[in-house]
Image 1 (cartoon, each protein chain N blue to C red):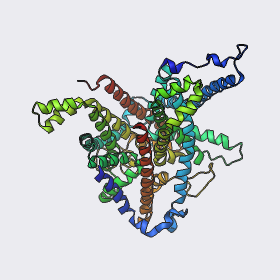
Image 2 (cartoon, chains in turn green, brown):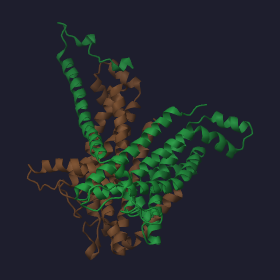
Image 3 (spheres, one colour):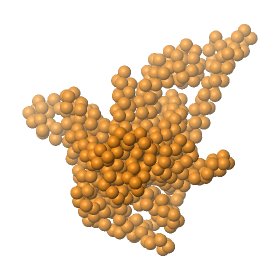
Image 4 (cartoon, rainbow over the protein chains, first blue to last red):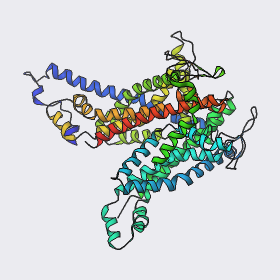
Length: 301
Length: 271
C-alpha cells in the first residue's frame, strides 16, 4: 500500500550535477500535479451539481411537509393546502401486488440458478434474467398493458403491480443467487450427511443462512419499484381520489410527481416537491436499511 | 425466466403486428410521424435516442473516469472515498422522475442562459438539456463500474511502473487505464443501455417535437419519450400498434447493447 502511495519525487537519478532536478523530470512532475488537479476539478464538476440536487430537494420538499400533506387528498387549483395521501396509499398497494408476485418467483428462480449454475438451462436462465434487468421499464409497461389492461378494458392497480413485478423480479433473483453461491459447500454436505433430504437442506439450511442476502435483494427491489413511473403511465394510470380497489386505477408517488411537476401551477409544483421529498426519503431509507442488514447480519456459521 | 422473456418478446411482436405489416421496412428509414394521416416512421425517435444518449455518454464517461481514478487510485480509503462512495450510492437511488423534475428547474434555466447569448431561440428544453441531465443520471452508475475495474488492476503492475520511475499520472495513463480499458468500455455500454431506456426524465425536458433534427438545442423526442407521451392518447389501432413497434425496437436495441456490455465486463472480471 505505502509502496504505491509514495510519490517517486525523491529518486536520486532525477538530480543533475548541481543537485537540482533535471528539467525533463521537473516537467514530468509538473504533469503529475497537473493531472491530479485536473482529476480533482472534474470530480468537483461531477459532484457539485449532484450535491446541490440533494440539498435542493431536501430544502424545498421538507418545507411543504406537514401532517395535512400526508393525510389529505389533493385540492383543486386555487385552493391552498391539500396532500398526497392517495399517492402514498396507491404506491403501497402497487408495491404489495408486485411483491406478492415477484418475491416467491424471484427467490425460487434464484435458488434454481445457484443450484444449477453450471447446467445449460442455468446458463440460459441467467442470461434471460440479466436481459430482463436491462429492458427499459417503459417496454415492460407496454407488455403489462397488452396482457392486462387491454383484455380488462380499463386501467387498474393490478396491471401496474404486474409491470412493477417484472422490474423487481430480476433484482431479487440475481441477489438471491449471489447470496446462495457464497454459502460454503461444507454446510450443504453436512446437512446431507446427517440424512436431511434435498428439499429440507435447501429450506432449513441454505435459505436461513442466506436470509440477510435475500432481505437485501427484496428491499433493493422494492426501492427500485417504488421509484418507477414509466410503466405506470398506462397501467395504474393515476387517480386524483383515494382508490383502494385493485381493479381500478390508483395514484402513485412517482406519477403524482410527474403530473404536478409538469403542471403550470405553483401550488401543484410545491405538492410535487413535497412528494419528491417523501419518495426520496422512502427510497433512501430502504437503501440504508439494506446496508444495515448486510453489515449487521452477515452470513455467519 | 426464459419463458417470461420470450413471452415479453412475443407479446410485443403480436401486439405490434398491424403496424409491422402496415409500415413495413420504411418504419425505420422514414422520419415522418403524423397520426392524422396514419403515417408512422420512427427514424426521428431513433436518432433522438441515439444523439441524446451518445452526448450524455461522452460527458458522463469523462467525469466518471475522473471520479473513478480519484476513488480507485488516489484516495482508495479514508474520508474522501467514504463520502464519495456514499454520495454515489445515494444518487443512484434517486428515482428518475425526481431527476426530471430537477432537470425542469435547474438544467432548463441553465441551458436557456447558454442559448440566449448564442442568439438561439431560448427553448431551454431540448436535446442538449436532455443529454446533460442523462449524463448526470448515469454518472453514479458508470463511475462505480469504472472504479471497480480500476481496483481490479493488479498492484504488481502499478508497483512495477512506479519502481521504474514513472510518476503517478504516467502510471494511470500507461498502465492502469490500458489494463482496465476493456472493463471500462463494458461499463460504458451498460450505461448506454440505461440512457437509451430512460423515459420519465427525458419526457419532462426534451420538448416533445416529433421531427428529425440534428440541432442539439432544438426540442426533439426519443423512442421512450414518445411512447410515454402518446400511448394513452393513441386513438386508432394502427397508432397504438406503431407505438408498440417502437417499444419492440427499443427492446431489441437495448438488449443487444446490454448483452455486449455484460460480455465485456465479465471477460474483464474473470481475467
